[in-house]
Image (tube, rainbow, N blue to C red):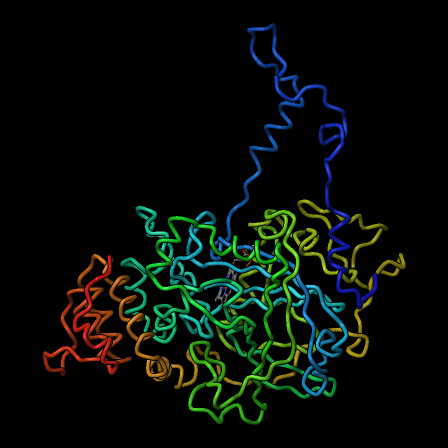
Length: 535
Ligand code: HEM
């Protein structure tokens, strides 16, 4: 296959597409079927016979059609497209798909919500996933990001707790919405590292107007490594060409009722009509030598790199120009993994990223039924793959020969490791030293500076939306104690904000303030002295 062919993934998928038009019906064994409406019975009023292999095959297949939904990001929707760099990034990375502006790399993108189940509504208040699989000539590269640049927690070990708190409560499986219940806010109040992220989650960013109008962020700090072995710290951004737009809460709620498929419909129809969504890929880079120049740890995933300090450079664009053929085969069976990298892109010791590197394959082993999900059409790289892994559920490759181990001298079928010059992946040789401990650097304990920065960067209407979102979501919390703890936590971000929320939800306002309700600066908005809990 031509490596520069932007359609090479599509051509590969073509081998798997089934077309039933004009065909005679068969069983899965290829036997022609004579009848598909009546099962085989003993007499015209008798019982169905076990012998009816067609009935049994049809029913058994149906009985097994469902696979587990993703433990998070269950509801999603995907599309195909391509990525093209603007210029060679050779000074910073040797990743081949970032070298030549004339080369288009096929991609598959899956957008998602995080908390709701597979059948939940699209316009709920939630973080959105923005996961991209680049089918490069060096293997698949996955950029598995979100539409918010920071995360709730700093260390992967807390992820199961976070997700248990934000998913529907176990005793009654309510609510589908991530943030309108006791366990979510109990988690937030007791895990102050979430303060920054929760400000974003209560902002308009968490109710995007369209997937076409949404940013994406790699969140973690990664590494670019060039041919000479020089590394830079890097953060990834997707910027939509249409700009960032949000719904307002009232719209979001109404749409969730009237058209729960609003975002997937919008994406599907735009692509069908030829209005292809486009995003620019941006990077922020920091020299290795500057790692400690900042008053935050650049490996802390609850902190962003302010763009005034580290500007975003646009390095390429992605166009989504083809709808998927089958949601199950593509959106459901696709398996993203932040550990799928190519030479020139490497990890850092961000403790959240490190834990993600374990989690994705582990969950996909059960979700996709065993170790061979890389053979599924949507997950297959466009370059060949060769190794001594074999067997397992649903194996499709037929490995030939007597021996299946490295360093066999019996047969000439042992694939040899590639040197770095031949494209072999060599991990960046970062120097690591220290004692085995569970703590991180001191600045990981600063949970509020960037949350304040975010709040202070908002316009008055945006602030009003955030206050109303807090009032709505925290207003649904039944535990007065949790509400009070939330007020106390957000008073560390901004006392006026906490006061408005306290009044909105009927909690005690934070201390050290006089009793008058603080006004926001805009005269129009300040007329709204107290915030009622929106219905
Ligand atoms: C999906 C784990 C943090 C973005 C998932 C899945 C798991 C998981 C188990 C389901 C995967 C599947 O079934 O295929 C974790 C853990 C995290 C973490 C353990 C932290 C320790 C993050 C962060 C981001 C993120 C920080 C964004 C930068 C996503 C996305 C998906 C996903 C976009 C959906 C991928 C798809 O569309 O198939 N995550 N996650 N996750 N995660 Fe994470």
